[in-house]
Length: 380
Ligand code: DAV
Image (cartoon, rainbow, N blue to C red; front, side, top):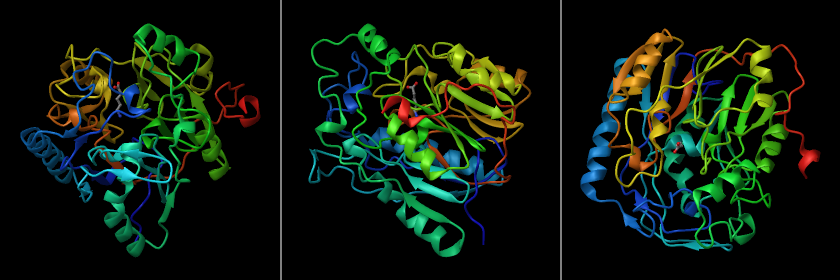
């Protein structure tokens, strides 16, 4: 029986994984995660299990998401949460606790009949893939074509980070300058990526070069998928460039919404323009601030889950984003989800594709001189 098949984020969704909030911890500060906790966030310095009432509220919204998906004919699987409040000790690092398994999108990258466990850069997330092993074992047993892959497990020792990146009173202005120059907290010592930095559009993979994904990861993807084109994209304007799915979000073939505070630079748009793709500014978020104890920005407003070329799940309080989707010709299903945001993201983050109908298409048949194509030797 065919279980795993997904080449993009918009073909008809039939089977998906939805995360769980159980046991989620605010992980101790570490070289990479200082990057993720904004400088003025009350979460700086806080660690340990999240309060139980917030876990229960998040789980209620995650369960409701699963129910809505099932009502729309989508099969839903759930991970098996681990006791995340345990220390991790490896030959290269130690850290006081793990994180959680609410955002499967960060760790699982589905490309066709393959699911890859990503080599994530947070020490607290080193063992997160284990929460998905029970379901992936089942897919392996039942789908003879499913390829279960783990990217090279990273060391995450001090050489993997610029250990001085957050020294002193580093301001957002300084971070903006650094990220614009592509100076990230992660180094090029080893292959590092979060699956949520990889936008899959058939034969083209667009990877955000940011705090959680480096260039060596793109080269790994290029060698792993020699028939694909791997592109390195970046979005100046974000002091914390983490994950492409609140920045550059496709709704259907030919249409992408782009965060207006993080626009894709002109020279990186050529391949989209030459192939008649429209890139439109996303609507403004409905909220001025994220919910309490949330890592992500208000732009989770655009972190939607597309069910097919005409149907999209949007967070229920994001009135402007829902209105824009409607104008763009999409049917919108509102889903309350703000209680889940602090656990690692929005509706797209909280899910990972297992099966979408459709094949590996070439959405960019017209060739252009493309500055985004990964060319290893240029930067080695
Ligand atoms: O805008 O904070 C959140 C992406 C989570 N996967 C942001 C990015």
